[in-house]
Length: 212
Image (cartoon, rainbow, N blue to C red; front, side, top):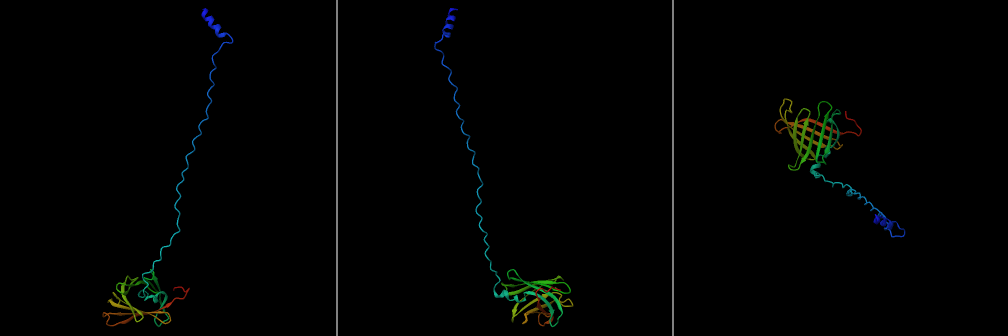
């Protein structure tokens, strides 16, 4: 009991040394700055577009004089019976495929029409023409220039009035007035003799003139 009182007295006496104060709370350190956002990745720029380059000009393979032998027939024509003012047809003759072929569109004023393709066969050194018409006829002609004219011959089935086959020879010639004559002949004796089958004059159609 005495000891407890003594200890109490010692603690309560003024001027006596006391326990050190508690340490101050730690000073908060500033937080670390937030990491920078990741860089934005842009898609790569497309390569520069170069200006389009025009393809090289390809020279036609059909420029030799042999390919030009039938050019006088090219044009828009009104067709008449030779020696008559009576028109029988219209005909459009066009150079095709860079001058390598000639296309004919034949339209008679009465009846069905027809047409042909003509070209120079360089391997055979001959002109060839394939004719087809609304009757279903198909005739292959061949030939070439002769004395300044184009002469083509072909075998035509049932061409004669009695249903007999025959040879047809067509001679095209440019006239001094700019017209073209097409003289057709037929033979029933394998070319020994010939008789006129048709005789046409192609006259240039005037600009702005309508077809019949």
